[in-house]
Length: 324
Ligand code: KDG
Image (cartoon, rainbow, N blue to C red; front, side, top):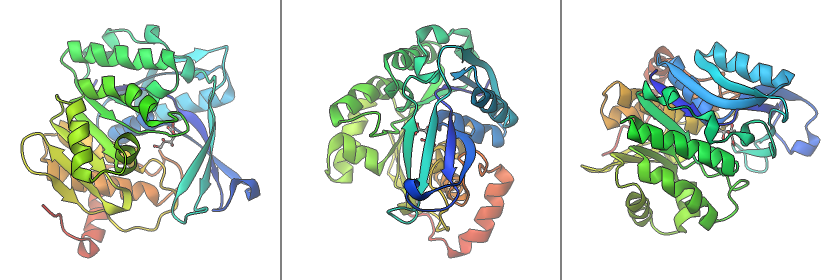
C-alpha cells in the first residue's frame, strides 16, 4: 500500500447557489473529509491508498464507503458503527466574502468521532510507503486523538514516512493552546509538514512569516520540508537543507475553495513519492489545488496527471513563473 490515512468522511451538503445558508433552499449532496480527500487525490494520481475510519449504519454511511471506493481508495478498514450516525456538514459559498466558503458542522458524536486506538492494527500500516494525517482527526475527540497518535507511532516505529497537515479548524480547536496541544505530537513525528498562513497566524500570532516558520520548525525537527500554503497567494516550501522555494498560485474562477488544500497535499506527496524536486512538487500541487476550486465537491474535481498537465499547458502562459 502506498499511502495509509485515517479520519472522518462526512456528508457534505453544498449550497446550490452562493449566499447565506439561511436563504439556501437547494443543496448538492457530496461526501468529503480532509484526509480522505487527500487519499482520493493520490489514487487519482496512480497510488494505492487505504483509509481507516468509521461510518454510521445508515444510508449516508453506505454512500461514504461506496463513493470513496469508486476513487480506488481501499475502504475495507472503514467500520460500520451501529450506535452513531455518519456526520454531516453544510457549505455556505461566496458569502459574505466572494470566493470564500464556510462550513457548519453537524458531526458531534458521529461514528467517526468515536474511533479509538483499537481501530488501529499495526498490520494496516506496516506495508505503507507513507502515513498521512491532519490536525482535524485528533481534534475530533480523545479517542480519535489516541487512534491517530497510535497510527503515527506505529508508522514511526516501522520506518514509514509520515506527513502531517496542521489543518486547524477553529470550530474544533477553540484556541491556540488547544491547537498546539493537538498538533505538537504529530509535528514531532512528521517527515513532511503542511500548514497554512491562517494556521500559522492562529498558532503563533501575527508574527512575521520567517519567525512563524522558525517556531514551527522547532516543533518538527525530523521534517525534511515544511510547506506553507497561502491560498490564492501560492505556497512556499522550506526544505531543511536549502533555501525556501515559492510558487505563485494559478488565478482561476472560484466556485468552492473547500478541498483545495487536500488536493494540494495529494499532488505534492505524489511528487515526493515519485522522487520529483520540491519546485516540481509545488507547481503540480498549486495546479491541483486550483483545479479543485473550480467546481463544487472536494472529491469530484480531483485531477489525474493528465488533467494537471492539460491545466498547466493552458495556464502557464498567464501564470507568473516560479520564483526562487
Ligand atoms: O479540507 C476540506 C475539508 O476540511 C472539508 O471539506 C471537511 O474534513 C472536513 C472538515 O473536517 O472540515
